[in-house]
Length: 189
Image 1 (cartoon, rainbow, N blue to C red):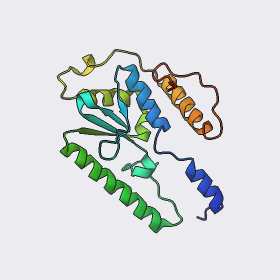
Image 2: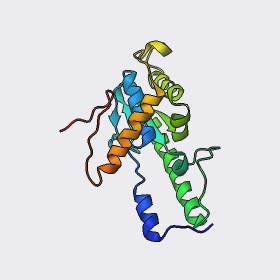
Image 3: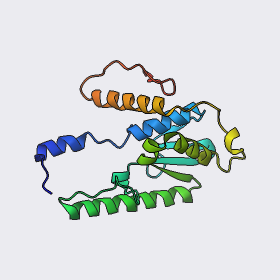
Image 4: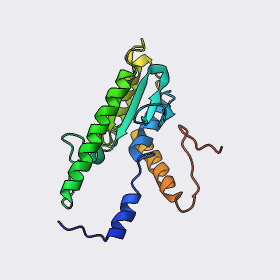
């Protein structure tokens, strides 16, 4: 299959793909925040700069895109038909780096959890609650008593995440008005 976009068009499309503040990441962040969790974003002092770190629990969470990090058995982990050798090598490097990062964090005493993009978009509430239990694991809490009994509403989380991503993309050109999220209000510094 031939790429229907020119090199410039492909470059522009690929430049819109970000590694931070993605829709799945926003879904997880808002959901965990509503359950009472507080976290640090992209801790540069740890290997791999985990998306979320919970120092109190020595837990690190990575939100992986199924395509880029090769989620086993996921339909979203397809391989492009053009430049196949490049993509196979690129994906293998990503997977190898992920394994190395996980090992380094575990050697430092951190519990590492990987959350897949498809889990957050297809099974939002269940995934957020599973991650909340995993974060608290080993902290001496009963599963459901460890975090606030806040309601996690899937459609609200998806709406907030979509708004945050739209705001981020628009910020490359100009900043639009944003209504905000109770869970993670934008702060001016």
